[in-house]
Image (cartoon, rainbow, N blue to C red):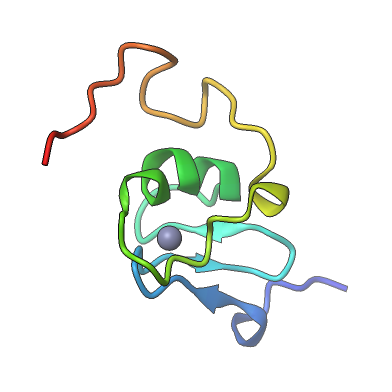
Length: 79
Ligand SMILES: [Zn+2]
C-alpha cells in the first residue's frame, strides 16, 4: 500500500515541510527527499523547539549529498 496519503503526513511546524508516514519528505519546491536531507538543509539550523525532525533514529545517516555542501567548511550563521 502506498502511504503517500496526506492524512498520514506530519508537517513540521517549524520548517513547514511535510513528512509522509514512510519518511518521504515533501519540500515546498523541488523533488521529494528524505528526513536526512531535510535535517541537513533545514532542521539542523532551526533552534526552535517543536521541530519534528530531530530524532537521530528517524533521520538516519546524513550523506554529503544531503547538504548543500559536503562537510566541514559549512559556515554557520552567527547569532
Ligand atoms: Zn523541522
